[in-house]
Length: 221
Image (cartoon, rainbow, N blue to C red; front, side, top):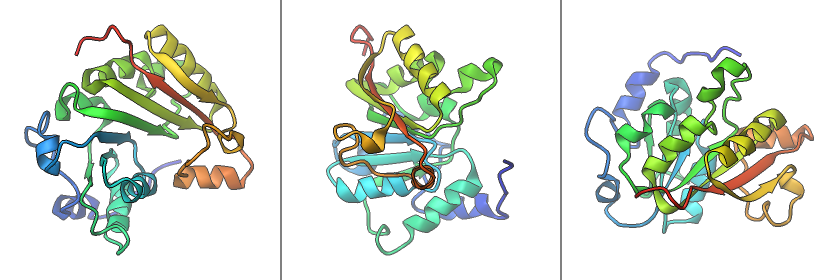
């Protein structure tokens, strides 16, 4: 489905105090920007932002960063962020960048957790390396995650989930949790926060898959 462009989205985002301008040296500066040394969690492809903002409300002891490559989508997150229930949060920022640029804006050991929620499945095999759970992206995550860091991945796409499990194993990562039906899993479904997509899929009766994984112990940091 073609994404509808919102006129003026880029300008609105550039003016927002909630969106960090990436045309500066950001890698290694995030704890200073937040003003503390608390763990930093990152969502790649945050969409309209509800998932991350709910986390930020529930966990003021953690800093959150959401990245979204489409200005028109990020604008919706900014508008939500401006609502009364979220506007006073001090532990969350947004970036309008592509996922492949994460090593440019985050330094080594700077991120404690990465969330991947309902990422584009890129169904054609020739586009496999663009999938956010491909071994190419896992290597990028290794470069910014701290040694005990992990990823959490949710999808409604069974083929993408199988691919992700295979890629994680091939990359030497360790799957620490896995379920094919998150909403009926009492362990992995505990304290689950739904994204907008997830709520839609759930209402349609579609099962949601989830996995958690830790990076290789031998990775140099």
